[in-house]
Amino acid sequence: MAVPLTEPVAIGSTGPRMRARVAGEIAARHAAEVDAAARFPAEAFEAIRAQRLLGIQVPSALGGDGVGIAEVADVCYQLGQACSSTAMTYAMHQIKCACILRHRGTSVALERLLRKIASEQLLLASSTTEGQGGGNIRSSEAPVLHQDGRISLERRASVISYGAYADGIVTTARRAPDADASDQVMVVFLKSDYTLTRLQGWNTLGMRGTCSEGYTLEAAGAPEQILPEPYADIHVRTMVPTAHLLWGSVWAGIAASAVVRAQAFVRTAVRHSGGQPPPGAAQFGQALSSLRTLRSLLSSAIRTYERHMHDPKALAGMEFQSMITLTKVEASELAVSTVLRALRVCGLSGYRCDGEFSIERQLRDVLSSPLMINNERILANLAGTMMLSPIPSSVSE
Ligand SMILES: Cc1cc2nc3c(=O)[nH]c(=O)nc-3n(C[C@H](O)[C@H](O)[C@H](O)COP(=O)(O)OP(=O)(O)OC[C@H]3O[C@@H](n4cnc5c(N)ncnc54)[C@H](O)[C@@H]3O)c2cc1C
Image (tube, rainbow, N blue to C red; front, side, top):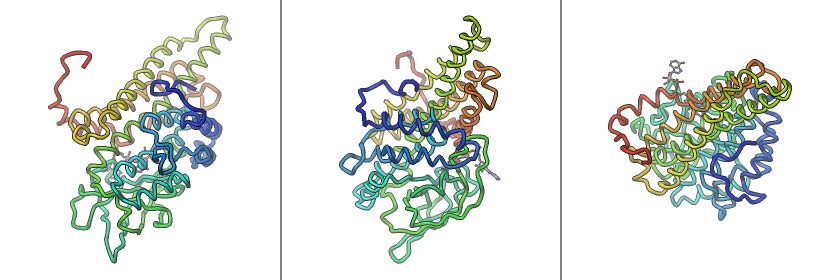
């Protein structure tokens, strides 16, 4: 296993990082089969539940570990080295947990839900993509309807990863039928609250085990299932930062696993050729350096987020928003280039779809990263803002 994403800290034998190692070993054992069959990583999630990793952000008073974003990112990084689909599923669940945790206000119902996540190890899925709207998260078509003290929602959710395997779905929606598309709320529905009717399958190049099929989601519940704060605030303060940091950590984990393979390949090749390095060995330094840049980019962004976490003004500010937005773009591009360099190191052995030095699965999986909210969409949205950003006058700023 490669080093943790953030600086090493003293870890107890039962800390989430240690427990993630146990789950990661099981996830790694089944990763090839999960990918080949495009099936849910059931064994990995059995292990994740057994290691009680789904409720790690839930405060200890509510039955969880009460850990922060850095520790969650490390778990994502470790799982990313084992099985990309397991890691991305875990990351998406933790993003939803962070939204509920930080924006539950004084809601007793949502506090009860957090307890349930920790005690019953519930897995939450995410529904933001709707109809033909793609990754335009700040716009919803389907509204929440209120009638006789109940709420209901019917939404064409074109992508819900592991929707069929989740215990609940956290979805964005228009606040009401007469609200603007950007006047959104976030709602939590548990499995007994909804039905899913399959619209499309998930036969993709990579991330095949996320089973990100499309569904019509028909849900009903109590008004308390709506997070009390507007989605606009949740988006800026929690959804975007945690998504970018945890997705990035998964992609860094995938990149690390490719670099580990590249290192093993060079060592083996040198051993078998009387000390002569293979032609691709020269690329190894660059693969390692690119991984290091990726890790320090994420580590620094995590620290910045931790610093501003409880300061809504700073989180909404242009400086933080452009930093956290670009972190996604840069992390995904660096992850792809790191894996490509590892492939060059391994040469034909990396290009093969079999064998211990194959980089094929990592490459297919990591290619989803610039598309998971298209980097071009993100850059286009940011372009205007960036023109107003001051250029630092010193290297240490
Ligand atoms: C591995 C993975 C897991 C994901 N999991 C989830 C999840 O759990 N929940 C979730 O809500 N989303 C999920 N997504 C979807 C993701 O959030 C984005 O919605 C998706 O990546 C599309 O982003 P985009 O619109 O920026 O990019 P693009 O795909 O590059 O652009 C899509 C744009 O093309 C247009 N378009 C798309 N299809 C058509 C069509 N058939 N006809 C006409 N126009 C079309 C749309 O206008 C849309 O704006 C996942 C994506 C990936 C890669």
